Structures are given as C-alpha cells and as structure tokens.
Amino acid sequence: MSDSTWVRRCFAVYLHTERRTSLDFGELLSGRDPVIKARVCIALAPHLAAPVELDSPLVAALDRIDEMEWMSYQQLGHSIDLALLARLIDCGLVFQRGIETRAYHRDCALRESHWHPLLATAHALSRWSNVDSLEAQEGSGICSTADLIAASGLPPPHYHSRSDAEARVALERPRIGALDEVMHRRTTCRNFDPDATLPMTDLATILHCTFGEQGREQIEPGAVALKKNHPSGGGLHPLEAYLLVQRVEGVDPGLYHYNVESHALDRLPTPAEFDIADFARRMVAGQHYFADAAVLLVVAVRFPRSFWKYRKHPKIYRAILIESGHASQNLYLAATELGLGAYVTAAINEIDIEAAFGLDPLLEGPIAVCGFGPRAHTRTTVELDPSERVWDATGHLKRPT
Image (cartoon, rainbow, N blue to C red; front, side, top):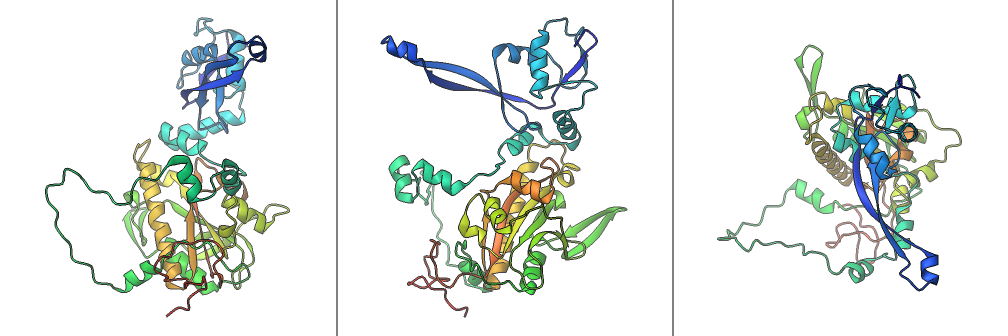
C-alpha cells in the first residue's frame, strides 16, 4: 500500500465490549491474585460470518475511515499505521479499491438491499450452523422444568393484574363455534409417525391455506396485490415456503419450492451425497421429535419485497416476524382440521438451510421451520394437551370425531 491506496469502511459495523478473565499461573505460584480481567472490543458486521475482536489501536483507526466515500491514504494524513490498515482490510472491515473480496461483495449487496443496518446485524449474526440444541441443553445441565426452576427460580406468573386498575368489568363466556373446536385441538406435535405417508391432497390443502393466493388485484401497471389468508406489512407478502419432503404420496423425497402462482412444487437441485434424514435433523437443530415430520417447511423471507416500500425502516423486520407467526398459526389450524400434527420452531440451523436451498441470507433468509404429518399412535415425547383433545390419559392417540 502507498499514498495512492484508496480505502473505504464497511457499510455497517457495531462495536461492543466484553469482559474477559484469564489466569496468570506465575502470579498464582507467587501467591498473588492470578485473575486477570480485561475488556475487549468486538466488532459486529452483518456482511461478515463472525464477530471480529479489535484492540484499541484498530478501533481508533477504524473510526477515521469513512463508510461512504473512498479515501486515499494521503487524505487520511498518514494518521493510520499501514500495518493497522492492512489488519482492518484482512478482517473485512475495510476495503481497498480494486480488490474485490467476498467480504467486499457482501458489503456491496448490503448497501443495495435497503436493510436497516442494526436489523441486518441482528439477523445475520443470530443465525446458527450445525447446532444441536438438545445436546447443548443437556450440556448445560438444564434438561427439565425442575432443573430450570432450580437454576433460575420460578418463572414470572402467567396471570397478570394491574395494581392501578380502577374497576373490573366481567365478560360473558364466549359461545363455542367450529373454529374454536379446531383451535382447541391445536397442539405442538412432538410425536410423528416416522413410517406414515402424507396424502398429496393434504399437502396441497395446507400449502394453499397457508401461503396460497386467494385472489389478486392490479393496483398499477406491473404492480399486483395478492390476497392471502394472513395479514402482511404493506400487503407485500414476502414469505416463501421451501420444503423438505420426506414422505408424501406421489412426490419424490427431496427439496422443493412452493410456486404460489402455479400452486405447484418446483423440485430444486439436491446437493451431492444428500442424506434427507440427517438434513431434517440439522434443519431443526437436533430436535429429533420434529425431524420425523412427513414434511418440513422453511418459512423464508424475500427481503427486497418488503424493503421496496420500507427502505431501512426500523419497524419492517418486526412486521415480518409478526407475519411469519400468522402464517405458522394458519398452518397449525389447516393441519389440525385434517387430523394431522404440526409445529413451528425458531431453533433452526439457518446457515445449513441456506446452503441446501441456495438462499442468500441478505436477500432471502429462513425465519422458522414448520413441520406437519400424521401423528404416531402412541405418545413418547411430552406434549401440552391438558384437556386430552388429542391424546387419552394413557398416551394413545384419540380417534377423530
């Protein structure tokens, strides 16, 4: 590098500090306090795969470099040591003009995507890869509610009353209708039949009810609004459904995308040496009781669809999460009405899912995984069904009435 070297900082980076402790065995042997406490600065940037640890000179150097305009080393007034600048370039927080690294291309994509930088950082750095959540839970020693209470005490109570309430107005008990009956049978299924096959008609019904088009209207030339069964921020409906089909009549096992316009499944390329059962378990972060579902469905978001209207908007990510909750509840209800089990989980390995389905997390990212299929005849894993709508007192599946 020289005076003619031009550099620019990445678009979004947030710094926070962590306290680190270590032991000095020399101090320990000398009879002095061996615990060394230090604070380190961590850089969080959505275009990078992992946080970057920075020392004070690197933080000071990073602060001098603009994130929008390219600056020559001469413009910086030689205020940054070239070795420090090289370290910032190597870790992907600063770019040298004319050198197009993967980090540089990810940063360019972020600049063009209209993400709010804080939300992009939270989204990118909360993704998992190859995490086994049950194994991690067992390693923590907290494997039951009793363990959790022993470690953290009782949870805050379910029922909440305001002490400043001025009066209480009693409400009549609601009349029970057909929707109530379905909702009362809705439970999170952790007991799927690993051998049962899902009828294709049931798959089609659930997809159409949850993600399908119920109507359309042209708003402007080239701009069409779709009616679906759930609300969406700005009526934009950015959610997409990607499926791992394990056992469906007439459908080969593999990876699919639900094509809303055609109401059809588009078969996607399958990675070499692809083990469906292993991938199902990795999708849901080791939750084996969820991996047995006949179909695992990835709820993904086409972010440019929402960001077209809500550019760098601080509320749009929240609206997207709300929408995914609406969609997953519709999936629950559609599956329940068909006599099937269903679930939704946010404990997923997003990075593994992105790799398998060919998704770019800044453009189309997984938010949750839903699963559905025939239930097992006997309950072996706990489910919350206090009214015994699904399981009888002996843990056997009730017949639909």
